Image 1 (spheres, rainbow, N blue to C red):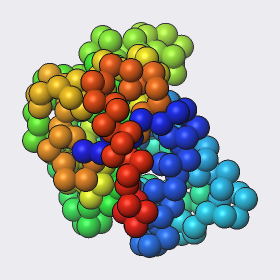
Image 2: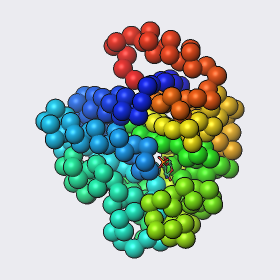
Image 3: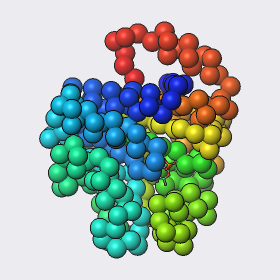
Image 4: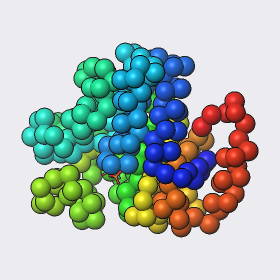
Length: 259
Ligand code: GLP
């Protein structure tokens, strides 16, 4: 795992956008795995700004797979992850709605297997952008999730529902159920790029990066992946023990290597 302590959320957004653009330039038919939540928002804003400025690549051939989706929201609800990603990124990049897939909350019993098949048929995700929950959840894999789980129905913890209440009117409006890629699904992506900012993420980041591999911290599954990158602002990195070493490694990184 490569841990990159950076100076600000803006620096994270810039480096994450560089990485996504480099992939799309080298592989115009890239399959992007995208996360929702607030962590990737600055990265999406940066990608959109570059696209509008005409400096970004064409996204015409790109396909997008979402990590997860709420169950029980009316179709088109603005807080559904499908609507969120269209508003925050894909519409502005010119990625057609039929090139954006997510787990189908209208047919929950079959949604998991169907989504796994769609991912397989697309050839798998090249780059998966990730955030992390304050309780260490990855996508909507809450603590206790099997490290080899596949896309399925999950129940949110009270903490996650409280955390996500800011996107809804109240905590009671946050759905209790979700469909989420499993940890085993996420591990199949070619490159995992996790972004985390703020002190609220510091404990989860430390547990994921320097703690034991455990279902009690689902994000620790990154330790199993051959190509995982973690971009952190100072607050999110504040509980790590080996920050000095991570900085040295990044400073000494060969130019040809990229993230
Ligand atoms: C959400 C999402 C995750 C996200 C995490 C952190 O509920 N399902 O994909 O990474 O929780 O959210 P945020 O980035 O808003 O802190």
